[in-house]
Image (cartoon, rainbow, N blue to C red; front, side, top):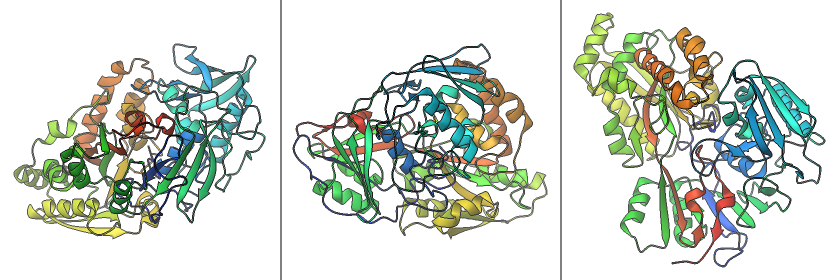
Length: 533
């Protein structure tokens, strides 16, 4: 998810959008056939990290991927339920060898781009080659970097030859990184730095209104794929705070919201079953980690990181700050995925100052240990501000640490973290695809998304390659478990919590329960307008 993981190192859910709310939808609320207005606090903007927000070769953030998921096609896409990808622009895809190094897809017939140009296997090859050629810093090229060659074949087929075996390759083809662009209009060696997009997905991007802070989408009548739009128009509207978006939903200015839902608002909706707003709760795979600079003179010492892990009280953190909207996380891999193991709890148990003191004493670490925690600057009173105030208190109350929290500008936070300027910093992650690998490989392989100096040969040379040869992902669980145990012992990254997903919508909006896929991306084609209860 680097993303979109938001942007590679940005904190989705923590960073409130700087966009201001606007009032009044295109057609307003009420009546079948009217535009469905979806509110979000996620940010779509042109920045140094996202210079081309709607170019698949550049964008790797949640907001842009939400739009690209609905306007571009991929060969495969996430399923309505479960995790195994289903077909979209392709009608069939299969590995053709036991080593999982050759993958062939047969395209659907009659595919066209929104400009009328035909979509062929040559466009698929062009799109992947373009992504890898541009290799935009902070972009999603790493997801398909294992592709050695893309070969269009007779019969409108396309063959992918991989450098190394990878059973998760179909999952990667189902991400917007593999979005198919028009080879006749997109340049092969540079980004398209505008708000237009020529895709072949369920919707056409009509307008990105930067002044009105909204994106307008209309149903693509020429779409040929596995998803069928149940509505004609969507307005995606951006808000600057949870308070403003919640007010907009209460007043009927918007029909649905999928981000910026506070725990207080959730409690209110749950307590009032007669309210005309429905709340849908789903398991979430968004996680919060703390990342350590393992080359720092202080937190570079393993004993310091282990003692840190021994005193953090996740249960208090979730209870006091996030109420029931998150759960304690004791591993890189969140609960609900095959391969998850509570390695940190197994290693450290309940928080213990006594054990932390023993750990530091064994390694002759003088106390109190001075540590600085970094987080992006957010509005006062936000959950992340409370979270880090509590982390600071938990550490300092032990008298083993002298911890300080510093806030950084959101515009420079990601870059500074990647450059190794922070001892300990906050990092949020949503998966690119729902597999345990996407919570291990991005952080522990060479040239990882954190730009972390930490390496472990057993993980990178043995365990990760082994999991990629297992078509049955259950068979990869043992290797994933071992990797999680190593991380718990070394603590280059400290998992804190796993969030839940919530969508709130007026009760005349149907399809809400299908509106988020397994990677927390919006599937706007599922929404429709029915009758209010």
